[in-house]
Length: 293
Length: 242
Image (tube, rainbow over all chains, first blue to last red; front, top):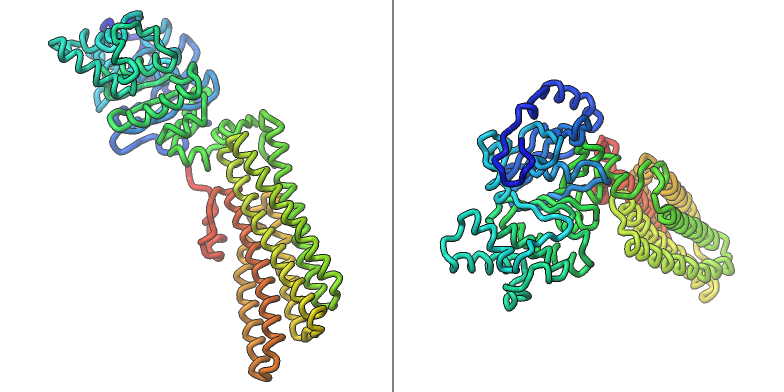
């Protein structure tokens, strides 16, 4: 396993070392937190089975099963340090870039093992795109921010095709009308909310199947947040979305299913309405009502 | 909240308990109103009947205060799960208590109408039926308020199930009243008054059962308003398997 983004990542033998021991250790710990609710959906876009993540000796994610269905938004909530961002990063192998991080288990995208040795992680990260907490547009023009992905992935043969990718992506992100007259201006010159929508457009430009969002609105004001949430709702028609958020109100607003993580365990997952009106696990209820026993 | 960990924001817990206390206070007032209204009827005490009518405004004021508090709780605290169900349950119960107050006032006005304005004396037939029914519904109301205070689902279910028995008692009383009209058509006036009183008391019992249903919703998350009362003891309220 290498630490460089974009390199072909080989499944290191050390990832599989002592897998059996880790699994039994995990089961012993995980008994207390048997996941409540339906982890599986009928037509999953991504399927995770027995996922464990270790940072050195620290067991960060413990034996998690979870599906992300087609055209749904799954919100992941939980206290700081519970592992929700760590889990999210498993889904496009961004944890490969972290020293000492080991991932075990099975994660499939449309039934393809994403940790297969033969898998090229670069196209994987196009198919499973990511948007981060702090908007991070490239230090390039607005046009180039969007065009970069299709260009390096060989998706556009001509300038005209590239123009089309740029306009389509910016329209889907609800940004076209605001920037169409200044595509040559720096992406970093946009407001925070616009930058985040630019990042979403950038992810969309490479035709992903899944979009992962790690606290995408944390750095945004309420109006920009509302616009991004509206965009998430529109994107659901074409993509599957996994979103980590500290805001339970946001999780309630944008998602169809909500997964609650606690100390590395997936405690409960269910329809968002059910989670926020009648959660079945006491840990879930304590967290979402602001009580910690 | 009873039996739960403390909220990080203690003020929220205090406000929730204050909201419950307001409902329980309103419940006590409503219960006394019903008892005094029927007492005024059976004793012919017009002054007591006037007192019930005047005291009705205090129930209305509590209703207004309760609505303001519930709006504030929703707006400022975005309650979810158990807290959300609690606020909904108590809000609904307060509406039921306000209606109970209205029923008590209705009985009191009937007393005033008969004893003060028309100098008519309500037949003793009515007194026994009213007192019997009043003791039943007062007990139901008292138990429903206890269930709300203690979050006692079993007690709440018992009140819900008693509503079915109350309906049967009410139907029996109506049949008996019908016989008085058949005996002597001049009884029709007193029978109509009796129907009004007994119907008001039956409504008090129904509202007490509603409060029981609200407690069940709050504690279990299950809406049992349209479930037959006898099914509530058959495992319907058991938690769903994980």
